[in-house]
Image (cartoon, rainbow, N blue to C red; front, side):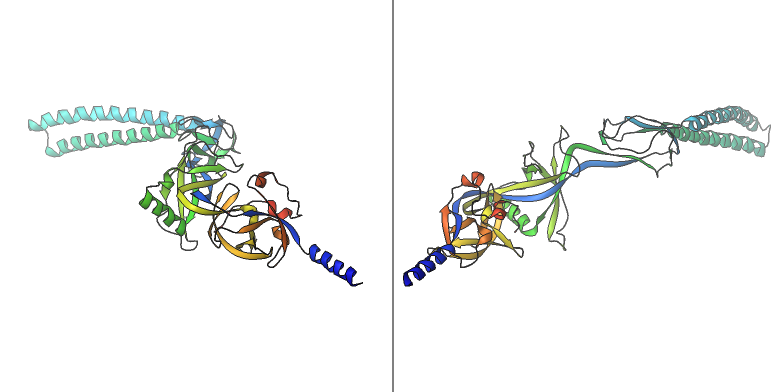
Length: 378
């Protein structure tokens, strides 16, 4: 009976051992990469309104079209404005005729006055009438110019080259000058990526520039939402004047050439800045990290196969790894698969993994939650 009892205890002890997969912490020189989340913005964006009121008589684009600067987009009913031009031309012609007549009178009365043939009052009246006629000509000239401007403004044109959005307005709709938004358009080459960096990250990048000459913010890599790397590099050309007190971040905008219009306003993207090289950096697999209450932990396997839980401060992602800024010595053996099944003090049976296994291995420990990878937060 005692032999059977001992056998049962051994089997129970073995059943408490948790199978996991493990990997040794890496140490190597690593690019000091900082990654930030951003969104694409148009360099130029405008809401198009008309300078004159009236009904739309033509619309010459479709939503999503790329239009050229000066291209006619809408035409407002021109009949009233054309009539105003004709009336202003006629009024100006009459005023000029009157000015010619009064100029002659003024010249004649000037001669008569010099010959003492008319009184000074008669002479002054002639000069005043001539000057008044000249003022009338100037006023009618201004009215004609305004009428021509209004006539010209019946054609609503693109203020710059860019892509135009869809518009619900069509022929027959009435628009009010300066109020009705006819369409919105934006310039897509170049574009800007708007993102924010923390105060500490700003200081790190500034230090890398001052000490090592690394121009981190002048050679920015852009990673699109599908994981592809955008072909062009960006440069920060706008920065907020201060650190936002509520968030402790600095807002930046980086300019990227976009000749093929691949980048569109509103798209999500990740910006990467390289601040040089971290010497002998500590790297751990992303799968080895467990997050609890906004803190990051890893499980370290001791020489007795018992697990200890350690909090770590993570830096940037490097492929399938995180840079560890603090919390590890650099010689630990970590649980990589099976993270969700172990806790502090658990006894494990570890099967070593290689770096190549991170891409190909399937978690056979039943820990499906540990196989995903996410972005780090410091």
